[in-house]
Every structure is written in C-alpha cells, then in structure tokens.
Figure 1 (cartoon, rainbow, N blue to C red):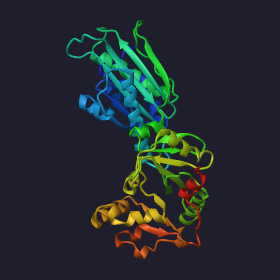
Figure 2: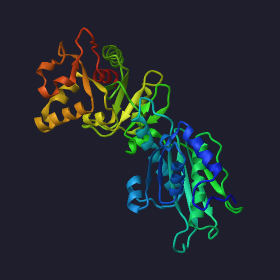
Figure 3: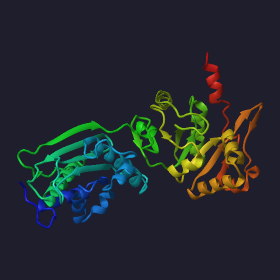
Figure 4: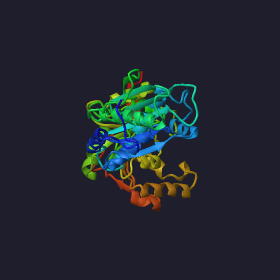
Length: 391
C-alpha cells in the first residue's frame, strides 16, 4: 500500500501528476459530497490550480445535493448519482469556460459521492463513486473500501487518488497508482456522454449548438448574429437573409430555433429532429429554451437578433407585455446585454412592408437596424410553403 504523508499532503509522485493536470488545457467543475474534499485540497496544494479548477461545491447537506440534481436521488451513494452530479458539473463548466473567451476550452464535469469512516460506526460498506464527463464520454468508477483498514484521513487519501486518477485519464495523462488493498477492486463503466438535445428538453441545458457537420455542443459560446425562427420549413429566403445580414453586419450569422414557443406547445423530439435535419451539411443551428428575446439575450449576450417585419411588430407592441412600462423594461434588459435587432421587410398584400425606426417607441429606436428593400427582398414565407406542400 502506498503511504501518504501524515499531514494529508500529496506525495511527490502525486504532486507531479497534479502539476501535469494544471499544465493540460482541460478545466473542470467539481461537485462532491464531503467525501472528495481532500482531492480538491490536493489540487490547490500545487501551484497552477486556477488553470484547472473553474468551480468546486461541497454538496454535504441533503438539500444542497437535491438542489443540484433537481430532486432527491434514489440512493445518495450510487454510480447513477455520481453520473448525475458529473453531468450537471459538465454543463456548468461549459457555461463558465465559455464566458472566458470566444472559444470554450475542453472541460470536465466531476461528481463524487461516498460514505467513509467517521466518528461513529457505520453498518454499511464504506464506498465511493466517482464520475467524470467530457464532451464524448462519461466514465464512472466505484470502489468499496475495506472497512476498518484505514482511518478517515486514510480513506480520504484513497478517494483523492481515485478522483485525480480519473481526471488524469480524462486529460490523457498517465493516472497515478491507487493505494488499494489486495481485495479492493475499482469497478469502471464507460458510457457515451449524455445527449445534449435531451438535456435541453429536460431543462438541464439552456442552449445547444448543432454544428453543420454533426456534433452537438451544450452551452456553446456564441458570438455574432442569430437569425431566429421556427424554420418550418427553412427556405431560400432564410439563407439569403443570413448571407445579406452577414455582409451588412460584418459578423458571422447562425440560425436559432427555440424548442419552446410563447404561443405554442413545445416541440416534440421527432419534430425537432426533423427541423434540425434541414441544416445538416449546410449551416450551424442553435437550439434554446428561450422563446422571448430578453431570455435569448441572457443566453447570447452581445448578439444581434435577425427578425422579420411581423416579429418586429410584436416585439414593439406593448399589448404583448401588458404595458408600455413592462415593454420598456424588456428593451432596457436587451440594451444591458448588448443585444439589438436587424429587421428584414416582407411582401404582404401587394406591397413591401418595412419598419421605419422613427415610428417605433423611442425606448427601442437605438436597438433597431432595418434592411431596406434594395438590400433584401425575398417573397417567400414558411406558411405559404407549408400550404403549398400540404395535401
């Protein structure tokens, strides 16, 4: 059995492994339940932990763990609980790392739950479960410790080694040798990472980027402009508008679809996948749970929202807010988030309709940029296309 210093500090080999972790590009969010605290201490005991640890939370109280997971787990010390903790830690890491710059670095979510030696005898096993999620996979390790073979400090040291070994492997670093007794065996389960779209529909993720070439990324960092719509179906007018907006704004444009609609029921998974498939190999598509623009602004600060004339009319109409005051508060929220609108006109009832910013409420005028007919006009609508293709 590998000894650890009496002070609880890591030995030289472990310190070298931690230094390698700090030198790797991965960053992590660490969720643990009292058990696992030494792993965090060891990470911080070696210089450079600010490059690795984005956030760590001790979910020691039942209410704290329940708050993280959304409900009380069936079993508090179980692989499925560690996986649920790691899943939420990963999504949190995506959000935190994405807020640091244009490109989200590789991130990990780490979840640790266990029950080990304390100041009273325990009838059950001393057991720990460690789960680590990255973009591609979830790996869970479960270990039952030999009861009575170590004190609290000794068992915490084993847990720390197990945590750091799991993180090292996820980072492509040689894991440390675990200080196990002959009868102690780590049970390891490898799984694909949870489905980002399922996380979105379940309310765990706020947004998912579906890239044109297939990968799906929860909590992706987004900059530029978003062409917002239901895309039922997507048509050439949408594509031309995106191209024109990219040229006029001088920034990249992505399409954005809210799976929840303020006036309609949420999209079923089958229908959502059908709409996603329209963009395959052509363009990136963002999915969100934000039907309202002030909600989108919270997800996508600094972005320009590209909308049509009809949507702009609703955005400016105080009847949709209950009062002018409530509407103007929404405009102020958008302004604080650095968001604004680019409005495209449309052909309707024999005339091309475009928004005149001077006729808009004064509280919104600085948020509006309008495309003239000379810049963009496509006499297509998704509604008409649906009517023409419906038997």
